[in-house]
Amino acid sequence: MSGVPYELRIGRRYLRSTGNRFLSFISLISMLGVAIGVAVLIVVLSVMNGFERELRGRILSVTSHATVMAFGEGLTDWPALREQALANPGVRAVAPYVEGEALLIGEREDGMSSAVMVRGVDPALEQQVSAIGERMRSGSLAALEPGAYRILLGAEVAGRLGVEAGDTVVLAIAQGTVTPAGVVPRMRRFTVGGVFYSGMYEIDNGLALVHMQDAGRLFRTGDGVTGLRLAMHDPLLAPSVSREVAQTLGGGLWVEDWTQRHANFFRSIELTKRMLFFILLLVVAVAAFNIVSTLVMAVKDKQPDIAILRTLGARPGSVLAIFATQGTVIGLLGTLGGVALGVLLSLNLERLVHGLERLLGTQFMDASVYLMSDLPAHVEAADVTLIAATAFALCCLSTLYPAWRAARTQPARALRHD
Image 1 (tube, rainbow, N blue to C red):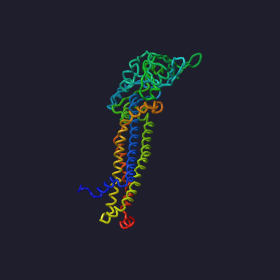
Image 2: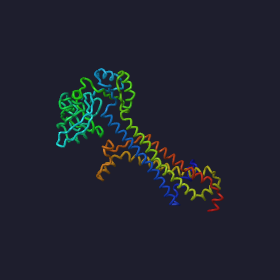
Image 3: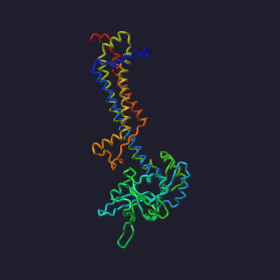
Image 4: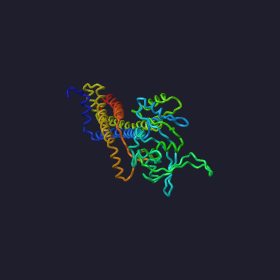
């Protein structure tokens, strides 16, 4: 203890002092305010990080990292282009596809229908570029055989049409057939070969898979395909790798990666994170500024002590350090408590939300609105460090004015009014 500066010892003693219970209560409230503000900020940003991470994982599990498409009639020499794309070291797998919009009509009495994007795939190659084969609730990708006219439906589409594996649906496309009675939409009956659930409402509600050859006959693409779907070894490198593939394949092709396809969505998430950070930081700031009132009251209460210290030879800087120590310790304890509480809540948030949903008999996350029904949270060390450092800095700034006022105390005046 002899090596500890006396300013720190006195500041710590003032912090533990119980002479003024109201002042101790205000100090505790300031500390709790900082802790709650920090915890709320950590939980909110963790939820945003978890939401973005989970959404990105689900999107990349059922969609390609990049696509190569042709303008106009499609790709007729796709096997050669596929081999060229596979030659790139960053490309893990390539699969052809045929895609078009269609209307699915159920064969129940109510005649429910649903607009979908029909994608014709090669089951063996499709398993290499997406994990949709692992998301099957019934049936499998192997059910898609050429000429069998089977179709795999998203869970939301199947639920809306009221069909399951083994039922039949009618698929109609806008390309019409000219008959004596006029132009009739091209239609074909398909057997439901299975139902998949990706966890993404947009996909489960708007995607149907058929065999590539059946899709080619339906959309009359012949031996051509709409494009190639690429899977990368590192999805985060998809923009650079897809540009390299485009240069290798030559001109006349349109290359798009997942960051471009969903750019607005992820940009909006990032913008929301920044806005929430600054808005909730105001809560921390308000809690930190409570330290100002706490220390002002402490300075007023300790005026005789300050005067005695100054009379004994304490410098103004030493008095400033005493009260700065008191405010800094309040801010430090509040920040550390908030970090511990925020991280603990974030790591257990999903279980807490599910328990609350069961208790109240409701669902907080509607998949049709938020694209998922869970509330994932992912704690990032960089965010926690930034929040803790910012909160602690605000607390330290809040101590300057009261400590400065204490340093300016005139001993004679303080003792005269005591």
